[in-house]
Length: 137
Image: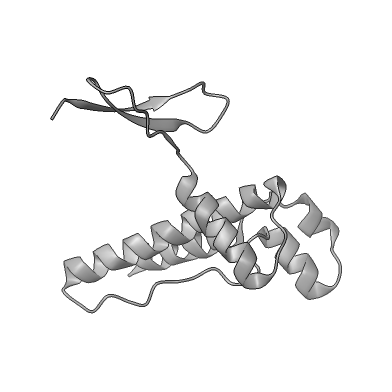
């Protein structure tokens, strides 16, 4: 087998691509850095009957990544503590909403405070709470 290089490809203004190219063969099997999130987003859209959009994908991706980190962290903690791994968290039908959008939808409106709050995903907020709780114990 020829050596294979695995390196980021492309400019910094777009999502990096990772390329795996064998030196003796002219075959490039590059994939987008966020390919897993895109696949998950397409499956999620189909599951919940949502129409895919670039704007909603960005929010979904942030929530997806936060959820993935939470699941990996919980699995690692269970492994380190030699306990059963908890059930993985999954994105529900609100997975493409920011926390602000979700709260606005649930309240039927918005307040000035909500509009002034920075936009972050609901999962990001849940992760912060989980980390704070973990640090406290």
